[in-house]
Structure formats: C-alpha cells, structure tokens
Length: 192
Image (cartoon, rainbow, N blue to C red; front, side, top):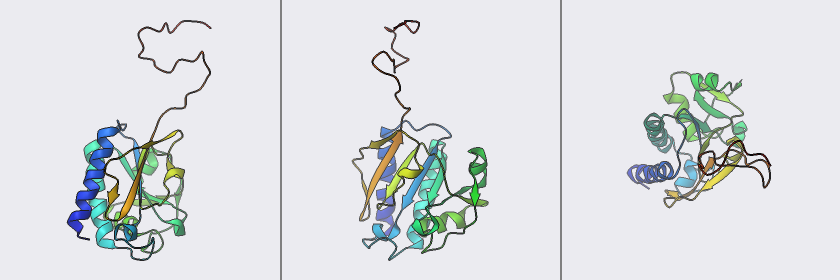
C-alpha cells in the first residue's frame, strides 16, 4: 500500500463526511485509527509511523479548513486516552492524564500527533461532536449522546473499514412536543 493511496483514501472519506455533516465550528472531532488495519494486518501488529504521520498531517489540514478541534484516540493499552492541543483540553475543560503514547501503547497516529504538536496533552474522557473510526478502534465512548451513524460512500482507507458518527440533540417529550423551531406553521405559544 502506497502512502499516496492512503492519503487519497483519507481525503475521500473526509470530503464525504463533511459533505454529509454540518459540523459545528469549534466542534470536537475524534479519530480512532489502526495503521495496522490500514496496511491489511491485524490491529496492533504492524503499526506504521509514516502512515500515522501522513494521517495526522491531513487530519490537521481538515481541522484548520473546517474550524474544529482534533482529538486522536489512543489504543486500549492507554485506556483509549486522547491526545490533543493543551489549548483544546483547556477550552473544553478536560482533565489531563499522565501518559506518553508509544507505538504499541497508543499507536502510530497518537505518536505522530504527539510529535507534531507544540504542547500536547493526553486526556481520558471527552465529549466529541462526531468523528471517524478507522479500522474498528471504537470511538463511540468519546462521542456525545445521541450518536448518529453517517453512511459514507467512501468508507475505506487502505484495507481498513471506516465508521463515522455525528450527533444530534436528544428528542425529549412525547406526542405534544415540538422538535423543529423553524416550522413557521407551529404556534410556539400553543398549550396542550
């Protein structure tokens, strides 16, 4: 698998996602990734720093283009902690934890992010507005409730399947509840 092919696949996935999802400005986008799965190997068996570096470069480019904060999920060996800019952690009031990602305890994308960031921190729990999971790393624990699957047409990066999530506000109430504030035919002052 060539790096140029991996980059093209990632760009297709991200373009597809942002064409389908109106992602909030200053929202938080989480990415879980197995570079081993991208390369057609089993998770954690063939981590690739060059692949991780390429992925982080492109993800950071999209974060700047679409004005969102980026959180990179590490693997289970660091309890799926996430690396991000210190300013992102402070802005979202996330509690920092002490761990430095390594190739087999965090993964290649986490290591690449750690090395690329000027002031990286790891946090254990976040509430993201959406994200992508490359290769079955399970990002759902980090995405705000209510999670909504995004049906991508571009859903592979290399040999890894990609699952995408977005969120929506909870629909609360019953048959009398209104959910669309833009409906001009509904009297917002109606009672029962």
